[in-house]
Amino acid sequence: MKRRTGLLFSSAVVLGLAGGAAVGFAVQHARPATPLPPVPHTLAAAVPVPAASTDPATDDGAKLEGDLRDLLLERPADAQDDPVLPARGWLTIGDLADFFEQPDAELTALNRQGFRRAAQAGWKLPDGATVEIDLVQFRNTDGALEFVDATSLQQDATTPVVAGTATGFVGRDVSKNEAGFYSGYGVLRHGNVVVQIFVDQTQDVPRLDDLMALAKGQADRL
Image (cartoon, rainbow, N blue to C red; front, side, top):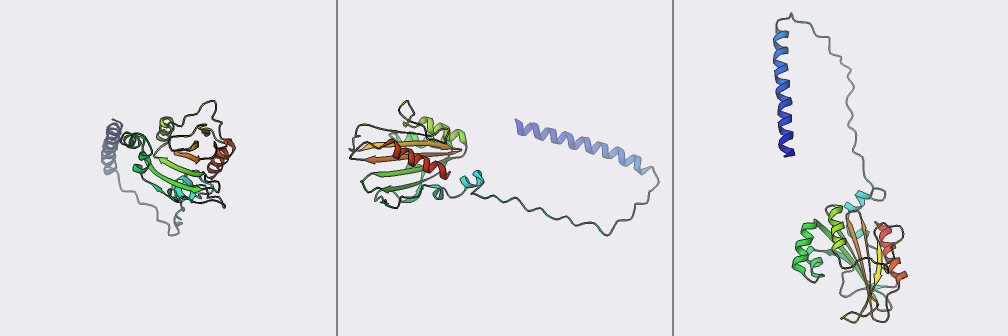
């Protein structure tokens, strides 16, 4: 409806201008010709103004429009590549949906939320713990908010917030899962990008300080 109204308004303006021009032409036609002033030969040439450049280091929008893989947290010096997870690569919408209990339903949800792209990094620490970090970008902030709300990694009284962020928190499971791992996680949102952090280890429950350091380090890169 807005598009149709705009077209009608534009047409009305054009008709008004055309009618006024016809009356003006009739009046001018009845008057004697008036000589025009001489045209100056020293008109200043118009200099095109270059478009303002954007620097990803200082412009947040330009940073999020660049290569998401460049924004992933760097692997620690003492860590090794995980044989299962890509060291630094892209996730398809299908890859992301497969992480959920109902992949088909999640695929539909991601399309509705406006999934755009996702990148992933992973590594293995000397104590055997594995770390995974996902950057999931949507076409707008609303989609990112819906994705965070729909995840099972919800915030509660035991999940401290990540300092310096408005939406970040970390948490952990104090008992082993079916695969035999203690798990920790972190979630935060920066604009239309959602960060997910997962830590799995067999010997002990992940420390909140370690989870917080990962989340804070990733947040600082966005």
